[in-house]
Image (tube, rainbow, N blue to C red):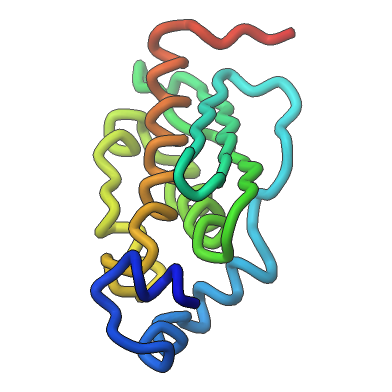
Length: 147
């Protein structure tokens, strides 16, 4: 809890606990799309050296009327409750979304979806966004090859 307060504009333990919304807790306790994907088109990995969080985003991308669209997304996140919840909600948001739209998802979009203050554990939201953007970049750069 001290970590949450120290790394945000939140002033008290009570205020930090109130920021843990029902939706955030639900995505932490029951993460959606959790696990390694078989035969993804792309993989994005990101690490937060300061806090030790690690996230992997697996994407299955298909062409639809000439547009690259995310047909499926899964994740593996090793970190705090907010890191897991933000990764979970992000996979729900991006399914069915064209890549050019997914690239524009912001930290505010995720915070709004989870109904949490943007300043609450900002590094956790950054982790999810960077993991997704790395997966998209790897898809375009053709860096990820199926093994």
